[in-house]
Image 1 (cartoon, rainbow, N blue to C red):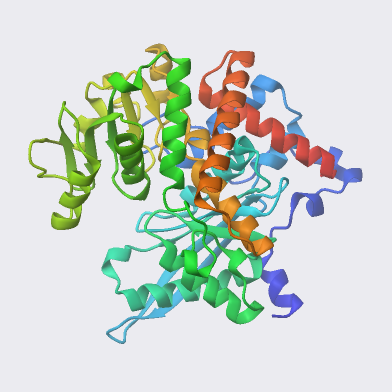
Image 2: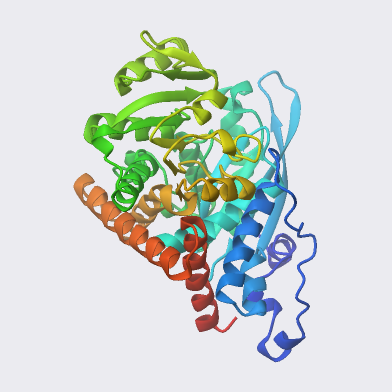
Length: 453
């Protein structure tokens, strides 16, 4: 497309283009349309939670106000209308989003989710978290996120493909292997990434590096499907050393049995020998003090559509799972699951966040008062974006890594990241979450200043 079309889409330019050094001193230190942190509640805005933690970290290290504002403010927010012809011949209009938060440390990176509750606030929050997550992992990416407001279970495969291709065509001008690299997220998978790659490649030539999380046959990486779950298990292993928790005697409860939760359960059960005593999905939860074998839960899910009903297990609600007595609680579902209304009832000795933004800031304060450590999402679930980086690197090099190499390099990065987060937490005498935010902010701020923004 021509320069006019590109200019129209790119209404919000990079901070470096908005703020020349000569006039930076005149900047107004107030971001418009940014809601202030509000009183915590079950349905607290995801973006308010991110801002609260971000501003806590910024104050703790006394970061320069201008740099803090640059990092906080998204570089670009894109909203697109997606007309799709349905199988019955009717036309539906869906709304899609892509928020590019920060690229000081490298190309924008972040997933695409399909969910009926997707809105700009959620995508903005997740894009901000991606900037911080890639910085904590110390991989050369920035942060972005995207999504479409849709219930994908109500669409046929052909309708989903048409929707995906329409969305890709609408964000085509702002993505690319060296610009912005999408990936799977909630309700998207390798198949969706295949459609995105193909649609983009139809305009730009074969471009496997434009997305990650692809099938192996199209340039995907070995170990990518399990990467987030494996990273969660590595995060748990490292934190257990710090907090003197014997995993061989521990009982773990996992809320969520999608890609992340199921791979976490599999690796804990089959590789690490850790007992999973509770599992939840959208239909409810199950509990067995003696342990739940991953393969049994998977068979039950594939046979009936839910883990609920597995022989030998007691049925629970997901709320009961969150509040049950256990050694480790792993929220692996959606955001906002641990909040002011239930945090006081949580009995876990350690929380490891596999989901994005599952804990509100008031819940964090309650956990701190109860001496329940929380291993934060921006570290704990960074295995996915780390192996996405490996996949992108393989695509750019046209070279495939062995599975053992992927696992080994992921373990190395997760261990280094945990050590850095723990060191930051101890240095500033803050929780692991704020320690991780401080670590990320310091790294993004340094890149920002080195680039002269």
